[in-house]
Length: 99
Image (cartoon, rainbow, N blue to C red; front, side, top):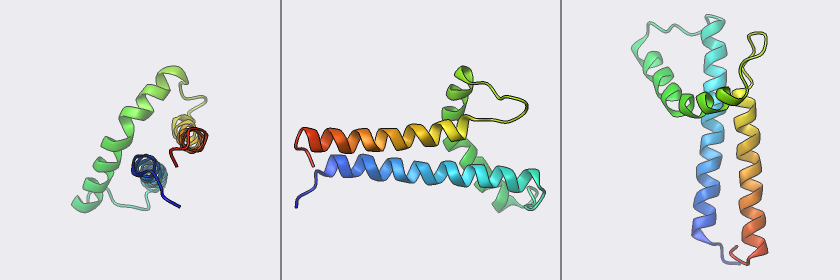
């Protein structure tokens, strides 16, 4: 079976971003619980990278769904959106014989 490279690329990029969101959430918990030391330059660099990759998307979601009682739903909504887009891409590829 031959795969469409564009469909595969989109799926891989979405999968990588899904893991970046998960890592950003875990990192934020580790910072809040004071498990990681943000004074360490390597840790600070990793946190900045994760923030730079996720915050623009989270900010757009927060414009629609603000935090409720101090709980930010934006990562959860982004993960659901990624899942939906992945399935929509696969469905479209199969439907239009692109996969």
